[in-house]
Figure 1 (cartoon, rainbow, N blue to C red):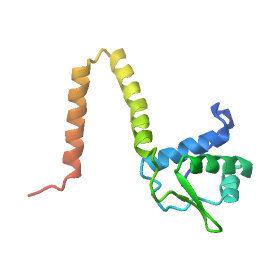
Figure 2 (cartoon, rainbow, N blue to C red):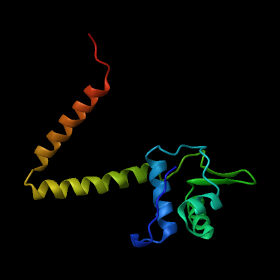
Figure 3 (cartoon, rainbow, N blue to C red):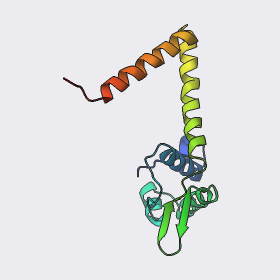
Amino acid sequence: MQLHVSPSDGQPLYRQIVTQVKYLVASGRLNAGDEMPPIRTLAEELLINPNTVARAYRELEVAGILTKRQGAGTYVSAEGSPLAVEERLKILAERVDALLAEAAQMQVGLDELMDLLRQRQQAMANAASPHSG
């Protein structure tokens, strides 16, 4: 699991961890039952105070994304995050906003943009399907 924090980010370090873990769960890179690194280990990797990691883990537990097993570590919640779908849509909404803004700058209308999305989706589907013949 690759997490990165930056003191110059403008967000508190614990919040950066929370956001990244939510993204990893929402994107399917972290799955239910996956073990999280121990607090001390992650703090050493990120070169930050263990209390910062502990705070992030607590917030993720309260959100139902992580669960702590007494004496056995911290895991991605087996129930799956109730926020997973919401987080996925939030991530996509941010990307859609950026795409719409860029399209507007380039004077590409919504109909043209939708056509392009359909074309790209079809191209991806064709590339993913096994070639017959």
